[in-house]
Length: 282
Image (cartoon, rainbow, N blue to C red):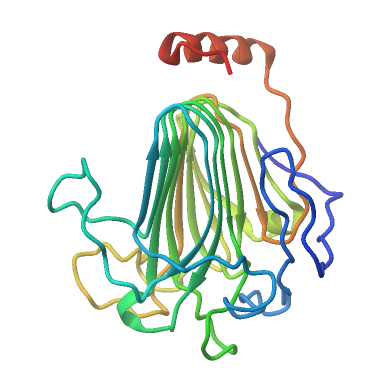
């Protein structure tokens, strides 16, 4: 059952940095949000609230028994570096890959993009074998015409085998979200839920569509084998996988969706399976 919590409010814009929260994240100044047009509006990627870190692209981080906590500015104009050690030759690297065998994966992401057709999709893979995944894609414009969408279309894969997924998305997100989990704890913020419709729920695989549905004959996801897609054809897409994984999704700038207590019996089996799979209970 998908839940929409009715009493959440949008966080007002802030002018300074708050203390770190329990996740070790820094709560940065939020972008302005235009709810009328539902496009990504806000400061440019080099504006206030952006951390003073160098941009990167094709970032690949893989850790063992250690959490991953990253603030990332993706510059899609940067060319791919040499493949990381252990990655097979010929592998097509994603713009951002974060993985750990044990621990949380936390990512705060800004995207720099010039609106060119050569880089109209950004691919990201965030996963942990034992822990939670928390990802925020900030609601920011890249340099360019602010009257149209210049944020590239998102292609995200998130996996948390023995943990939960927390996701904050820019308000220009439009496309399918596929959630595969044995857990029924899926919740959206009220504003996100108003834009999200359930398309299918088969054997625990749920597919939602966020935003206006395409009026054409098929959905474009950038993998059709031809190069005929235009910006108008493309959709964002997200895939979320886990075993006993709860999922909470909101728009960037909103309050956190409240925590949902697991079913005691499912919590017991989740803990048992986690222990036998990882040798850990937390």
